[in-house]
Image 1: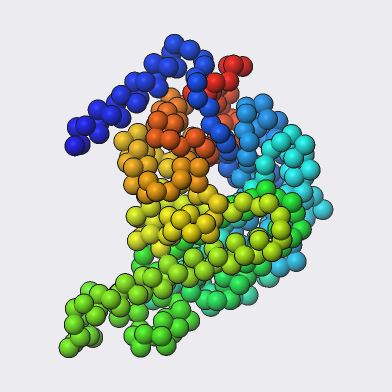
Image 2: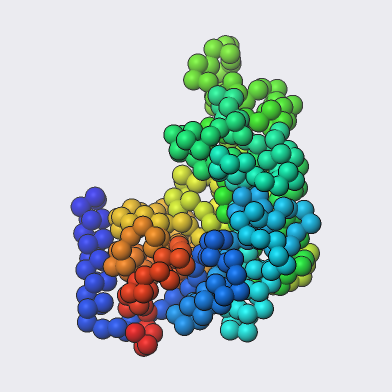
Length: 391
């Protein structure tokens, strides 16, 4: 089986390179093509003009533009502090994007980092930041260590991104819903794109508030379920313990799903045609069991309109493995395949496009604009996979 898989991947790679060499044209092109635009690229009208021009010239249909990075706002907000990475001079990047992209038939999705709140050893400058206002809202691991007490080197060591908010605290989800509500009510965005809509890893979240709520329901402190020695449950059947552990996992999963549902309902009340999407871990099983991000369920129940698996690996075999793990009952149109360009060469990325097409995934999203714009030969090579004559 493994050799068969390698043969299949090798055939796809050969086909991709063969088609690249013989012709600039393909009978295939993405139905939707998007790219992520990171917040450091949107600080001025001039920089945004360049992004829009690049997108239009190269056939992009959608842009995921980062408007919330670390608990801040790259737009005027009454509930979230203005980003410290851009002067508060009256310039509104989100409005500028919408005003200038819509006439060129480009759709703009407000890309929002949700539970990830902070990642630098330098503390936020604005005292209204949640870092100061609600330290009790931060996530906690099974050892009882609060993220807010960690340094960046600690996050590197444990392989997480930074300080996360706890999904188990109702006020946290209420706040995040308000963040989305403010945007969808004040702007005619085409989409809300949720990122870091998950836990740092499965040894979270043992925040005291969340633990107490679980204990009130099931009469067990979940911290005991994280300990390998189950002597605390002496006399209890193994099946009962396993059932409690699954309830603890579901409890954490459900908290994030509840946020998704609340955001969906908030968007519906606006009566605006706003798509809801999420950037997700590419392996759906790992996403569900390790990060409690049940994105296949979100798609099946129409809680989100589409997901974007961040399938950034440069390894072609692993890339396709992730595709094969997606439930075949999920409509292909609900998956926009995320391809990394920051970490691999243009021919490697070209192969990922061909693998996506051959697997039936015709919607593509590239991470990110910065790489594509800074390497003039990169995107023209990717165009070899599309039926676009200009290259």
